[in-house]
Image (cartoon, rainbow, N blue to C red; front, side):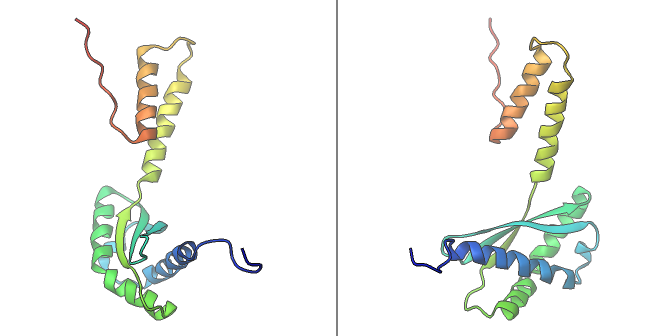
Length: 152
């Protein structure tokens, strides 16, 4: 490793740069679908060939606001890319795909399950606690909960 060279990859630097520039381009959008709710870019995944970027966003608002924002972002992709291209002057700007980031909703579900478990006063696990811990496990692994077979 040469002295003075950064120890991180180019893709990591580009990821941060793209997040910053896309965030700057969003306020200039005039689409009415983005007027309701508060839109924030939360993350960006860059493909290995750096030609596709999945942009994750969160939105404070209802499910309808989220649906309207998704459609507005899909309509505005070309404008956002042109803004990023003008600022960065790079040869290739990745194709942008916007996806809703449901991390906050999942965290709220986990918090609810944890509070339910904590609220139980008895030291023995009852059926409600067992079910709550199974829900927590399924949320953590993002797999559907397993169903128990009935004994006959």
